[in-house]
Image (cartoon, rainbow, N blue to C red):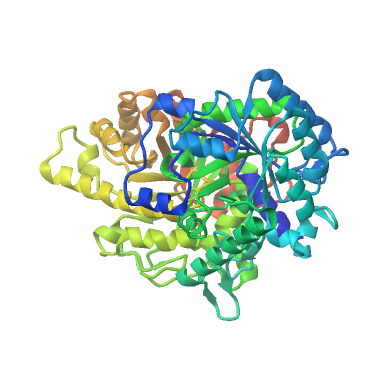
Length: 622
């Protein structure tokens, strides 16, 4: 049950759903393969608006769901669902079918305005006893995602989810399918579960996790992974088609867990339509997968509508999301035993949770002798020794325990100075860490020539182009292996110095054409002139450029009370300059109490003082 709860928390951490502009997919795998070989069809903004649709994801429907705090956070009451169906009709929303999406994608018809897809996951008995009568009453179509092994006797996972005897039968599904109102799609055969993901025993979504074989002390290789995923999806499709007399074309991924890599495996299995959960931002870089809004906490119709509106608006400006970063070096979590590692990790997570920041940036490399060259990494890879296998568990625990998004940092000097292909290394990173929110590539001072002057020399221009090219190759690999339900953003990190940053504006224009963010690091105690120059330079940027900057200040050892006050003032200055993404670098475990005491009001995203918790007064995190 503990592992099941972790996977539920993972799904919960993806947040509520989204609106979906139509993307690239076709009627069959052959068509899609041809489209993969060429360029996807392009659409302008008006076409996106015309063909956008909202997809809502429901689970169990019961008469006795508590208004608040029900035992199942995904359940909705029969009354609330019925009221929402009435609201749909009253407000003019148009429930659509999967085929409507196909035809619109092929430009054979347009979706109606206010297009809405209703989906119900897991094959719960209530889909027949509660949902089906409502569909017939309102003449609405809906899509039902079925984990076929559950229906065929996988009692363990199904019982953990819904208890005994609470799934539909094939006969009930055949009755629904014949009505013309119910479509059935794959929810996998046996991947609605967690599998062992690391030596520390975390269970993570089976579809995107390369399994860790504890007895052999190794991870599933690429071939084994592909064979497992394709075999499962083929079995699921074959069973749906045989039992229901259909040609199922869609996979609704368990937990919303899908990467572009396994999109391709789904097409091999004959499932060209792919749906996840999460934030629509990731669709900007995905050619095939649509995303769905996850309905939780038994909402009333007006609450569902508000969530729909929020995601419609947020999808058009994802860079406006506020972020509060803590930069942390995984070297601090090195341990002699799993118990010691868990103690240190728990300490970190307790401190971050109390601070109420929302994003961790983890340094994943170590330089043993301080010569500027990376000697080892904290994740399995084919390029350098693995110092300790710490990244995966840290990312997973941060996501599921404290709902923090996690970025991994790699230095670009791995390629510039050590000749290691950073794109290949990024592939290694993401294969075992698909739940990462994004990638930060640290350029260090390699772009100083560009930052310090408005007119770049030819050599400087070539340096800029080289670094951006490295970033683009790495970004492509990160996207291929990352969970589409996450935003999967890429930042280029610069360490600012000096009192002339006049080249920042042209560099921002150049870099942000390919980067999601620029991450700017500086030390205002050791170099106050740099902070002053930055404030001057940032006034030359427009509103969107400012919102796509992340500005973090370096913590210094043995900071005085005067230093802390300076930092407080610095953060206030950043806020006044409309910088919405701020953070600190070099966060140390023994800095927790001082950061909480001095920077809580600057870094915390806690909107209510009533929920403030000082762990140090209560004898908590140290």
